[in-house]
Image (cartoon, rainbow, N blue to C red; front, side, top):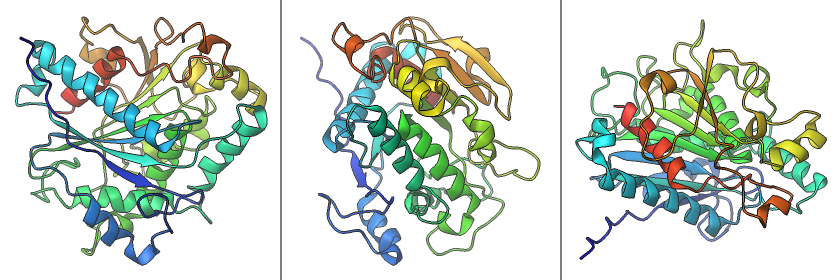
Length: 343
């Protein structure tokens, strides 16, 4: 008789409008800025048994309900892998019990060049310096997790009293939006806690970041996201662990459409190009192979998934190609490995 599958805790859905403002559940009115912290605190009751918190931000052409289903299916794959082959993830000997916060935003448009540009511009506007509210909301979300740490003198990791680790997961424009928002949130430390003054000894950090098929120029980490990484003058950069980026030449959204919209192919098609830190390139592995530490222990890792993210016969003719073909056990294997190596 087959053992019942471990039940995953229900995710929390955080909805943003086209300006990045937090909205009430069900697409209601924006939450006043002065009540964002209160609203998130009410909704973000982290289950006590959880070991890993995954914040997932979806990409282009994704309905809110689909975003939640995708995030939960990815975690379902990861739990199934862990329980079937725990010996492949020795760092998780104490257990792997994930929980997900799904950040949902209006990303639908016509599958055209105009539609692509529209969502690209919206993702940027939601995090823009003068008008975007997303960094403020995301900063409070991460700040809530930050306050859960037990010991202020512990290493600068967003791990709370239960030993919980924080991982960021994005797809497409969601990865671009996530990088912009996290970077700005980290540059504005007062929003990273509820009421206590910001303590420079406890910089805001995350344990790993995994972006599937990122919709951004290949030099985006030089032009837009340089302060995501530790460097002189930025000792408290928000990424403690690696930033891992998948790419596939079968991704038409970040190949054909990105080439037309931005005059160059995107990261999701060709991988990151110039960057402020050294990079490493490897391949997405099948679930029966273990990633060597030397493959992932870098500030930025480009993962070639072209052998797997190829799309079906139907999607190969779709304008986005294999852009959304990441919902696979092999992707969960990579996500699970990053969680394990964060220990």
